[in-house]
Length: 208
Image (cartoon, rainbow, N blue to C red):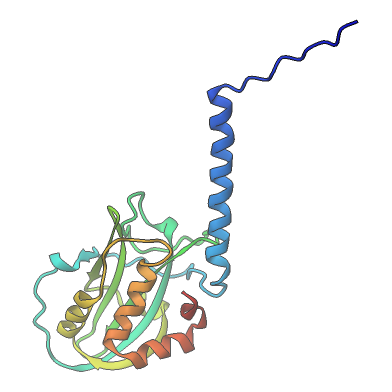
């Protein structure tokens, strides 16, 4: 009696694509957990108000003429990337109260001038593969009050714009040249002491 020969199993293209998709999803989830596990204290402020003003690319901002040096208060603002639109550009800066605390964070700097009552938000984001920096002006002061204050220095809006334009941008990379590295480079240019204060106030920012 001869042994029966079992025909080889044939995988169709749909089966292969299904397996590949599952591998990609699992890898993406693992990467997301790895990225966020080193930032345990950087959960978004669920009660933070929206910026409620447009974030304008630095090269498109109107010329800044305020050169009166005075006290400027700096605060750190983190936002779930889920609060941004599908293109990766800022939506309204709002934080979702039901957001996943493990979501990768977007960082921004909120700067308030008590004298003159001006509040700005500086930040960067990925735009068509490049790191794009921008500024929002005439921001509601509540945005500053809900962010995490980390230091004060003397500067002016004109100088801040000049410093922001000096920060290197280039190719956007989620693991090397992103909104978080831009924020730290900007703060360092304004004042190295301010960056030290940021690390002291929010130690997890040093890890990036």
